[in-house]
Image (cartoon, helix red, strand yellow):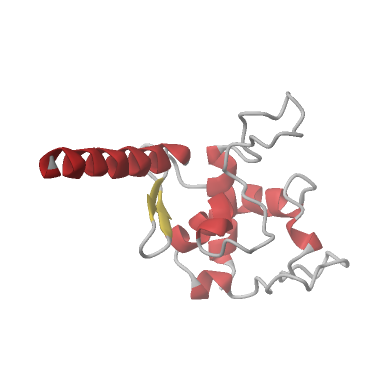
Length: 148
């Protein structure tokens, strides 16, 4: 009986960890050191494309964050400044914050840009999708990492 309980508990834990790993595919999430690694088959992003995405209304980063962009007059001050973020975090550390910052801080209001949208009141055309594609995440990672 003890063996059966142990086996069922182990399988339950294994099932939950496998489901969590599939949630952010193709990325590999390390929950102990809060990083997200990209597989080798995903190309690195482009800094200039990342800057465009950063300034776009799709991500709306500047509504909360200040960045070293003198040409942008209206910048937020609610979130942390992103000046020097590339010196503070590795690419993997930046990536996990873009994918889903709630992994690090469940109370953050930062949007999860690579988490499947499945909220009850979400329009059907957005259900089962993410805000950003893998390539867009990688462009943003490269741009933010360049801010040293």
